[in-house]
Image (cartoon, rainbow, N blue to C red; front, side, top):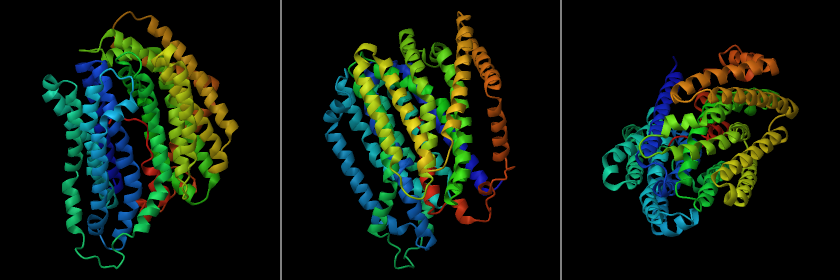
Length: 545
C-alpha cells in the first residue's frame, strides 16, 4: 500500500470512529434525558459549535490555510511566518467573537428560539459552548497546517477526541448537573481537538526554519484577502445550508417542549444513508476535479451522471426502508431510559417525512462538488441554497401551526429538493453538458423502484407484532431485495452502468482523467490546486459531530 493509501485508510478509520462516537453521544443523550424542554435548550446552544465546526474546521479554515501553508513550504519558509503574523490576529478575532456571544447569549437565544420553554439553560449553554468558536478555530488552523505537511492522522482524529471528551463529561457529571453536563462536555471536548494535534503540530513547527530564507516568507495581507475571496462562495454555501436548522429551531421553539429534540433525533438517523452515499461519491471527486481542470467537459458530464445514479440508488433504497420501518428503527435506537414510547411515535412520524428529502440532500452535495471543482469561484450553489431556504421558511411558517413538526420536516424536504433540481439544471449551463432528460428518466425509474420496495417493506412491517430487532433484520433484507428486483425490471441498464462504474473505480478505466501520473507530486498533494482544495472539504451535511 502506498503512503497515500495508508494515510487514506488511517483517516477513514479515525473519521468513522469519531462519527460512531458522535452517534453514541446522541443515543446517550436520548437515554439519559429523553426529549423535553431541557434537550431543546441544549440543541439551541448546540447551534454554536454546529455552525462553527464546518466554518472553522472543514471549510473556510481548510480552504484558506492549506494552500497558504503549502505555498510557504514550497518556498522553504515553514510555519513560523504564520505563527508570528496570522495566528495572533486570528486568535484575537475569535476571542472577541467568543466574548460577544457570551455577553449576548440572552439575545441570541431569543433570536434563535423565541418560544423556548427552558430559556435559562439555553442561555447558560450558549455561554459554555461559545468557547468552541476559539478552540475550533485553533484546531482548524492546526488541521490545515498538518494536512499541508501531509500529516493526516491527527486531523482525522479530532472528532474522535472531541466525542470522547463529551461522553466522559456526560458520564461523570450528568447525575450532578443534568443536561448542563453535555454543554460542559462540548467545551471540554473542543480542547481535546487541540490536544490531539499538538504533538504533531509542534514537530512541524520545530522543523520550520527560524529565519525565513526568502523575503516573501511572511504572508502578504493581499494574499490572505484573495484567499478569503476565493473561499467566500463555499463559506456562504455552508452557512446557508446550515440555516435550514436555524429555521427549524426558530419555528419549532413555539411548539410543545421536546419538539426540537424530536426533529433532531429524526434527522440524525434519516441522514445516515445520505452521508454514506456522499462518502462513496467523495472517492471519485479527485477524478472529477482532474477532468474539470483538463477542460474535458464531456468526461465531467459522464462522471456526474454516473455518480448521481449510484448515490440516488443508495439513498432511495434507504428511503424506502426508513419510511416502512421508522417506528421500529427509533424504538431500537432510542426508546430506552427517559425516551418514551410517545417520543418514539413523534420521532418516527417526523423521520418518515424527512426521508422524502434525502435524495435532494444527496443530489445537492453531489452537484455542489461539481460546481466547486472548477478553478473559478462560483456563487450559484449558495444562491440556489438560499432560494431553497426561502421555500423551507415559507412552507414551515405557513403550516407549522396546523401540522407541527411534520410541517417543518416537509418544508425541509421541499426546499432541499427544489435546490437539488435547480443545481442539477444549472450544471448543464455552468459546468458540463449533462443530459437532463437522461438524469430525469434515471432518477424517476429509481423512485418507482423505491416506492414499490417501500410498499413491500410496509406490508412486511405490518406482519410483525413485536421483536423490533428481528423486524428490522427481516425488513432490511426484504426491502433491499425488492428494490433490486424492481430496478432490474424497470431499469436494467442502470445496473449495467453501475457495474461498469465499479470497474472504472477499480482501475480498469479508459478515461484519460483516470490515468493520472502517479509520479506527479503536485497532483497527489493538491498543493495550491483550487479545484482540489475547494472540493476536499465541501460539507456532507450534518454528520454525528
